[in-house]
Amino acid sequence: MNRTYASETSKLVGKEVTVKGWVNSVRSHGKIVFFDLRDRSGLLQVVIKKARVKPEDIIAVTGTVVKRPANLVNPKIVSGSVELQGSTIEILSPSRELPFPLDGDGLDIDEDLRLKYRYLDLRRPRLANNLTLRSKYVQSLREYLFECDFTEIETPLLTKSTPEGSRDFVVPSRHYPGQFYALPQSPQQYKQLLMTAGFEKYFQTAKCLRDEDPRADRAYEHTQLDLEMSFVTKEDVMSVVEGMITHALGKVGFGDKIISSPFPVITYESALAKYGADKFDLRTPEEKQAGKLAFAWVVDFPFFEKTEDGGFTFTHNPFSAPSPEHEQWLLTKQNVEKIVTQQYDLVCNGREVGGGSIRANSSAVLRSTFEIMGYKDEEINEQFGHMLSAFDFGTPPHGGCAHGFERLLMILQNEEYIREVQAFPMSGKGHTSVMSAPSALDHEQLSELKLEIVSAKKLSGGQEVFAAIVKLLEDKKITGVKVTEHAPVLTSEEAAKVRGTNIDQGAKALVLYGDKKPLMVVVPGSVKVDMKAIKKLANIKDLRMASPDEVTSLTSLPIGAIPPFGSLFGIETYCDIGLSKNERIVFNAGLHDHSIEMSYKDWARLENPLVSAFAQM
Ligand code: ASP
Image 1 (tube, rainbow, N blue to C red):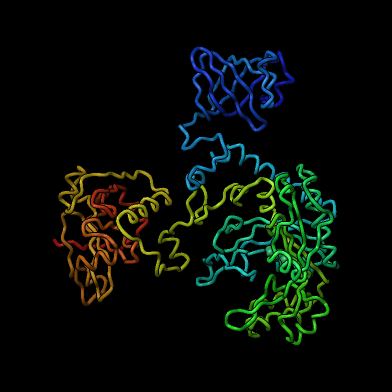
Image 2 (image 1 turned 120 degrees about the vertical axis):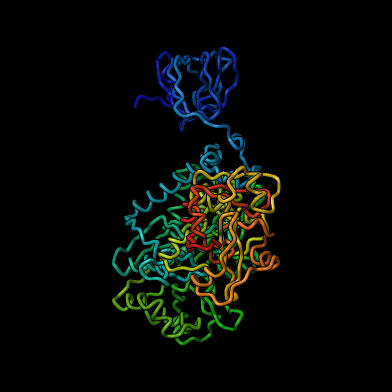
C-alpha cells in the first residue's frame, strides 16, 4: 500500500512519503499551516503551505520527512523527532463541525450524545485504548487456551430459554406465530452438551443477554470467555482459569500488578464472616494507590436459598453438582439449606469477574435439583428433557467457568462503567448507540409475526407525542419530512393559512366511538365525515364523535393537535380516499404550533389505515 504510518516516519528522514489520516488539531493559520495528522499508529506534525484543513477532515499528504531541531523534539508523540514538510494535500473526506470535542476523557459530556455519535466518541484516545487493550487481552486469553488444546466452538443465539437467574430477551417466530426463541443468558446447556459430545475442552467468547436493569458494571449484553472441560475437578478448572488470566494480564503489561499467585481461596462462610459479603477487596490502601490486582476464589456456596413464598431457588447455577458428601441430601431432598454446591466465583478488587462449577452429569441429580425448586414433572421434561436425555446417553464428569473479562478491563482501565470498554454499548436507560433501538415495528412486520400491541407506554402530552412521531419517522428512515413551527392554530383553515398549504392536504384526525370502542378517522381538512359510510364499512351499530374530554383522555392531547397516528394511542385508523389523492400531507403533530409534512404513501405505509370513502359528498 502506498502509505506510511506516522510511527514509521522517524526512520525515513529525507524520504518522500504519503501519510493518510485525520486532522487531529490545527495549530496556526496564515500562509503556513501546522497540524497534527492522526492515524492508528499515532500523531505526526505536518507543515504545509496554504492548506485549508479543519479538525477531523480525512486527508492524504505527500511530502518529505525532515528532522526537527533538537529543541523542538516532542517526546510525547510517536514521530516526535521528525515532521513532514507537505507538498501536496488531498482531502479524502471532509468533516462537519463535531457535536462535542474529542480531546479529554469526555466523561463530562452527556452520555446520550456521546452514544448517538459513538463512532466519533471512539476516536477519543481513552476509548480507542480501551478497545485496543480489550482486543489484545482477549487474543491472549484465546492464545492460552489454544496452547492448552481447547477447541473454540460457537453456540446458537436463537435458542430456548435457559434459567440463569435472569429474565430472557425473546424473539418472535414468523413461521410459528405465538412461539418465541430466547436469546441465551449464557451458553451453559450447549457447552455441557459439547461435553456429552466428547470435545472435552471447549471455549468461546460468548455474548450473553440478560434482561436485568443495567447498572454500572452490568449491561443487557455482555461478553464472557466461556469454557468447559471434562474429567476435571474444581481445582483443575480454577487452575486453568487462573493460568489463562495470569498469562493474558502478563501479555498486556499488567502481570506485575497481581498481588498473590496462586489466587487465595476463601469459603463463602468465612468471606461473609470476614468481609460481610462474597465480593470483597483485599487490597491495602497502598496497593489501591499502585493499581494492584487482588484476585480471590470464593467456594462452598449454599446450593439453594429460600424464596419469599417459602420454596427454594438456586443461588448460582441450577446445573451445578452438589459437593459429593451432600449428593445424598440432594437426591432425597433433605437438609436442603445445608447443601453446598461445587460453585467457584472469582473476585478481583471487589468485583465478580468470573464464576463456574462442577456440573451434575446424572439425570437423577439434575431432576432432583429442579424438584427441590418446585418444578413439576411435566415442566422438567418440557424445559430440560433434552439435558436429562443427554445425561442418560453417558456424559463425562465435567465442569467449567466463565470469565467476565469486561469487568476486569474496567478495573485495568479505571473505568466506572462497563459501557466504557464496549464498542457500541447501550445507554444506562437501555437505548442502543447510534441507532436508537428499541423502536416500533411497522404494521407489516407486526402482522407477519401475528403480533398485536395491546398496551404500549402511554404517551403524555404534546411534546412526547411530537417526539414519538419524529422518532418513528427517523427510525423508519422516512425522507422528505418537513417539520415546521408556526403560530398556534386551532382549525384546518388556520393551519392551511400559516403553513401555506392547500387545506385538503391537511390530514384532519378525528376520534370517534364505534360500539364503545375508540377509532380514528383521517379526512382532508375541508371535509366532514360520513358517519353512515363508516358504520356500514366497519359494521358498527352505534357511532358517535368523542367528546373533547374523551379525546384528551385517549391521546393526552387537546382537540386540534391530534396527529393522524391512531397507532400511537392504540386505536385503529381509517382514512378517507380523498386524502390519498395528495402526494404530500401535512398535520399538527401533537402540538398546535408544530406541523409535519410528509409523503402520503410513507404515512400510509407506516399507519396502514383502512382506506375508503368516508367523506360527505
Ligand atoms: N453459565 C455461567 C454464567 O454465565 C458460567 C458457568 O457456570 O460456566 O454465569
